[in-house]
Amino acid sequence: MEVSKTPRLRRRAGAFYLTALALFTLFALYMLLFSRAEVYQAREDRGHAIVQDFTESLQPDDQAPAGVNRVFRWKLTSGNGTDSISFYVIHHYVKVYLDGELVYSLQPSGTNRIGKTTSSNWISVPIYPEDSGKEVTVVATPVYKSVIGNKIEFLVGSRFDIFSECLLMDADVLIISIICILIGLFILSMQGYQLILGNSASREMFYLSNLSILIGVWRLTDNRLIAFLLPEYAMAFGYVTIGALILGVIPFLLFLKERLADYDSAPLLHAAMVLSGAALVFLLLQVLNIADFRELLMVCHLMLAATAAMVIAILVARWLQNGPRNTQHASALVIILVIGVALDIASYYWQKKSQNVVYTALAFIIDVICLFTIETYETKNKAYTDPHTGLFNKNRWDELISNRLPLTGNLGIMMLDLNGLKYVNDTYGHEAGDRMIFDFANILRNTLPPGAVICRWG
Image (cartoon, rainbow, N blue to C red; front, side, top):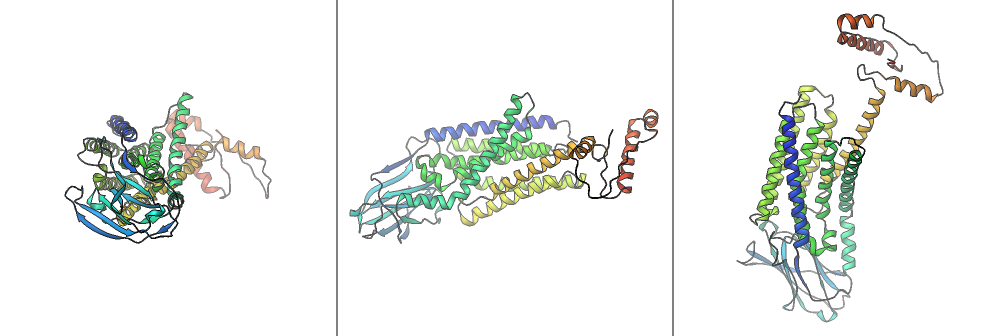
């Protein structure tokens, strides 16, 4: 049973989370409305596709954020019929020169008050026929030391070809992200519909919808296709991505707390409050330009790992205390999600990029499908099961009779009554009467053939 302080903790944890969610939403709106990457584009689009070789060198630069510039050079060849140089960079400022002439630059706008990085960007520089033989120089300035070794692949081709390639590469992530967002919006709309009808909304479903939307936003905004289609908003999307990741674990904890309503879930509520506080600290550091979300990413991953370990420990303790009953479903769903998170974190540090990180979103979709399947099955069982004896109830009996199913063998029907039940209730109390009914149900279960249908009529 929950301790007396749990309802108060639940309210506080919910208030902390909603405060963090509201402030992060305001932050996201600010970034989308007022943060831009300053792009200088001197040429119009034309042509189509080929890949060129390049050389790379590192040049120290005391003025650069990470103390170094990455310089790439190659010669444009003649007769290639292409129209642009395109490449994808993560957390780099970029300048592109043709024979020493600046034709493209990417850096944060001078009016930006928040954020150092332009996040993930597709760079596309149109090439004219007269550029044949010119030397291309790309100066990519890493914002963080951790991205200095990131591979940059240069493509010479049409924007349509690059768009098609982006679509093929990231279509799975895009579809999974949209599914997560649609699931969250659907659950949220059902909650609103219940409120319109005058029914109480479920906290559990509210937090689940929040988790679904945050996972979807996290993956949708961290997508090469989005960066290609909306280059001016790439900077804002980059911060929204990590903001959604920072917040996502909080509704998961609150959802799990509601799911484990019969257990002392104060640790989950305390953890949700701590993580909400940490999220607010992260937001303050970002707004004050003390530390970017990207610089706090490892801390965020450590918090995710610690939270996963705590949740598993709670489920194990609950299983040891109450046995597997009503625990296996929650445990299985949590384990699936934890495995997805672990695979995503490992994939991120292995590849040093996050574009193909989809295991958490996939695990969540699997969890939601399993959850609603289980809920549908259990709801149907509750409608047809007597809660005291575990036998079928009169509703199930009426349905079996009304279906008039064709018989393939002999049929026998017995209607049994318990003599003296009223006397037991009046003399020894209703608990004794309930025990008598329960024991009689067990006698029937153990005596009648396995295929027999046993229903409680009363």
